[in-house]
Length: 408
Image 1: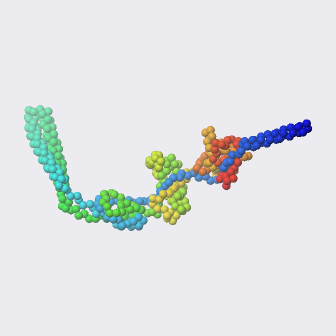
Image 2: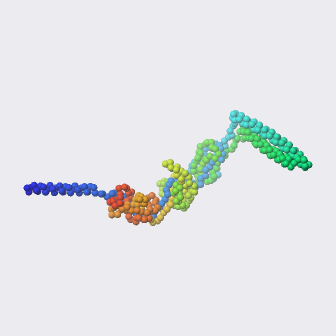
């Protein structure tokens, strides 16, 4: 009996211990674990907000040399980058020879001449008719005046006679003008029959000279070819006297004031260059983005501040990036933008206190995409969760990663 009681007690103690161990394992397995998070620190320092976009450089004064006459442009010897002096010959144009009239066109022109001659004859006949009516009206007017003086004709008859004279005189003037028009049309038709050799088609070559001293920026028509009057041939300017043109969104350009500092970078391996806004053009224009979106943009002109030696590697038409400062402060409370999110219509962060995440509403001011100005809700030195997800809630235990970027 003693042995059975001992075995019963041992089995009871064994299963009780096993149950307690299993319960402990279940509690340990299903207990809430701290969420691994990245932390950032609230700091105090300078904050600058800038508008950044692609831009291009250009010579401040670009002169486009065009063809003064139509003709054959002889091959241009100057190359892009070469220096030219004001008044130097940079291109030569041989004026186009007069075009000969073929047989068919000649017959058409001759028919036009005959038509013009017939129209002139008709106009002269009409002139003779109205001149005869004018002479008759003058005789009738003189006769009526004589009868009126003898109290035979009435006053109204005299007025009608005088009106007939003025009407006939106006018709004569109109007919004479018509004769002049027909004569001019006949002369124009006859001129088209003149052969080019008779008009003296051997015109001299026309030299195109450089308007200013500078360098050839671009040769628009290098090979020999036929050009029309006004066709662009060459661009001349000074590549050392550069300016930067940034095509900014109109909403961003409205925040920029003249004289604002700017940083020019992404032009090469060199350091960023300093500039200053000279002008925000008053006219915006429509531009289609690479994604097919219509955007209203404004040209912002930036002058370099660094000496010309710093810009020696940059030329006319280079692509750069311009960052124009729209707001800056020397000492503000700053929070990482990655920690901010919207909660019930307000900005908020998860502040870490005692190993737990606490929901904290904050008031945000300026924002440059990396850091945001904190006006209320946080103090320097406090830590916040970066990139908070749906798995984090108020009061949840958190644990910082060993390589948290916000605390390195």
